[in-house]
Amino acid sequence: MKEASVFFTDFRVTQDGGIERKLKMLCKKAGISSIDFSGKFTAIKLHFGEDGNLSFLRPDYARAVAELVKELGGKPFLTDCNTLYPGSRKNALDHLACAEKHGFSPATAGCQILIGDGLKGTDEVDVPVTNGEYCKAAHIGRAVMDADIFISLSHFKGHEATGFGGAIKNIGMGCASRAGKMDQHSSGKPVVNRDACKGCRLCAKECGSDAIIYEDKKAVIDQEKCKGCGRCIGACSFDAIYNPNGSANEELDCKMAEYAQAVCFGRPCFHINIIRDVSPWCDCHAFNDAPLIPNLGMAASFDPVALDQACSDLCLAASRFENTRITDNAGRGLKITKDLWKDSTPESVWDMTLVHAEKIGLGTRTYKLEKI
Image 1 (cartoon, rainbow, N blue to C red):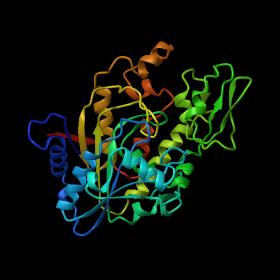
Image 2 (image 1 turned 90 degrees about the horizontal axis):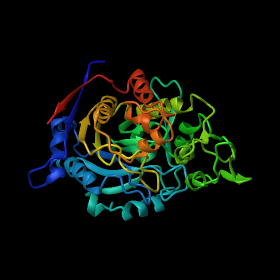
Image 3 (image 1 turned 45 degrees about the vertical axis):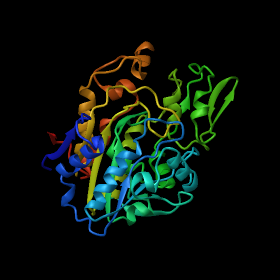
Image 4 (image 1 turned 135 degrees about the vertical axis):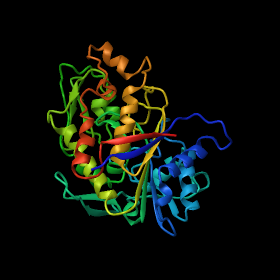
């Protein structure tokens, strides 16, 4: 596969319209106008942010993209699918209320908002996975698949299981129904090293399945209730929780890539990553830790693999802030390297997402960075 073009711009602005105007310019430079939007339903997939999290993308970014789609003749709507864990986005009513609390509404976003997998997270379509090795079919929210055109608008950041989260995670995990999310997380379930457990109960607070109880002041994970999401691993400050299945994170990365393949295959797609507030955590958490690096800019491409690879490379090359999760890891004796994602989440196999996505034909890791 030949190299893909990834277009990038920083956050410097000197004209009225600011970042929104610059984002539209970026998308046009990247070629979005070549898509025939005339009268086409266009899904703009983004993350509305968990209640308590402040690092999610502001509605202004979504409005800029929606306005551009309408200028090109399309019929845009914002969408996300319900969560596997019972937080503030576990059903469409709570999800929409959370989105509204975070400033997302038809008035602020410039288009309607639909929850992709319906009221209870069960309105799904089984979509064949082209070249799938782990999944023959992916359970995707029906509204996502009903769209004629698909656009991912992703907050590029760290992640407690996959190392980083960008376009592929926003698409593969984010567009999956609740059953689809369960399917991706089913590779393995964590257990507790009782000798290392301090009984602080942070893991139980983070568990969305009520799967963690305490016996003799030590955490115990109920394997029947556990969904395998791994949030407890990220919550533990003492490395007391781990996944005994050594390939679990690797399989999660691969399944996520295959789900993204199912969403994108056979229809026009366009992808945007916003590299700001690069927290080590997913926006699914009800909090966000301090960013690891400075805000870098915005990138766009027709190729989600090249886009994520380019954004990851930009982050890996960036200067690091002090007093972050990486600082904490160093204080606990973990070896710090030049790999931002491994230093933040040592158990991640972050590049496997890109390796497998390229292997199954979702895109290429070879890219040319066009700075504008």
